[in-house]
Image (cartoon, rainbow, N blue to C red; front, side, top):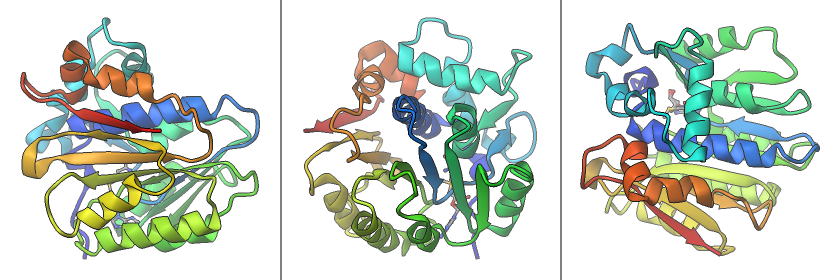
Length: 276
Ligand SMILES: C[S@@+](CC[C@H](N)C(=O)[O-])C[C@H]1O[C@@H](n2cnc3c(N)ncnc32)[C@H](O)[C@@H]1O
């Protein structure tokens, strides 16, 4: 029985980092004409109200997107992400927040494809309603994204960005992430895989971290060293040797933008590692 609802956390500092990187990756990967598939194994509800319901309970967005919303001095990749959020709030007031499916919808082209999986019955219903009538461009499957991922690989165009973003509510998710990543890479080595996982010193996390940080030796990571609550995103750009995520992550690293991205006070921030 799943109880995690992303609406409680929509637009918080972790979403800011994750979605800044996601926007940057989608921008980069859509430069080439060949169709791109965006596969979201744990899609959530597409978009979230910030002025009512769950998001207002702890108002986590206030220390995330809320801190960036009115700024006009952000470095380009972060400004680009904020622009995407603004696109969903055309009247200028921050009321809605785009989840990964909505960001992809905004950035993918007509030749691209969006494949989403969501296991929570309420979230998957919302997601299906959101994308009703958008097939074959966008297809939502109510079900397990780990298994569903294997069924859609490799995509016909042989180009895909895969976001694996579980809530880790089920501790078995760590094992599942590992298996899904390994199986997916066997089916489709050239995919670009972005995996979001907690950066905590727990035995269950170490194998995930080792798996995404070792093999081909190319990739990057963006991390929040915030102790037990910290979460990290590990990205393995295998499709191209020069996925230009550096500017986004460098922005996250610098003193001003770092705090802008993390949405936290002084002393907080995120750490970014690059491997070549
Ligand atoms: C962190 S949220 C996703 C947020 C979304 N990717 C975004 O960036 O806006 C994780 C989602 O995964 C869903 N979920 C949990 N286990 C799943 C599974 N095995 N397959 C698909 N979805 C799952 C949860 O219901 C939740 O909506």
